[in-house]
Image (cartoon, rainbow, N blue to C red; front, top):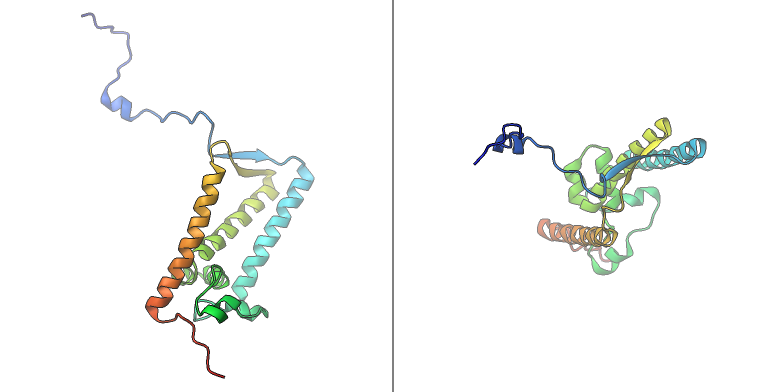
Length: 184
């Protein structure tokens, strides 16, 4: 058997050191240029302003000790679902989670509403990405050829339902649920 001395060395070490093959559909996140240099940056400035406004309002509120009800500080009515069932609705605790994230209380935010804590963090990330776009004219975008949109929707819906169930379970375990209204 002849050994080709000009053939490259394909030892186990060189195989481990090899770079992974690129995905045939391209990278997951792609940096794109805005279509219009002026209006694209104005649009990014608007998104930055909205994200900052939401986070500033949340930072000015005080988290409610019951893990829900923080929205009452903005003059909003109490949750009708809680009033009828004594249990939180799927969005109960979202405002409290936003407030806790802006105050750096991640554990309290997760206790109030896991989906709300993740949404608050996502709001900050979107604000930073929009500010980056405003300054550079480039923005990160998903390569939708690599993302199964239907599966993404199912996973987000499942996460919201699981977060709601977790909020109810934790409230039942710590005795804060069901909410009991005073007789009157």
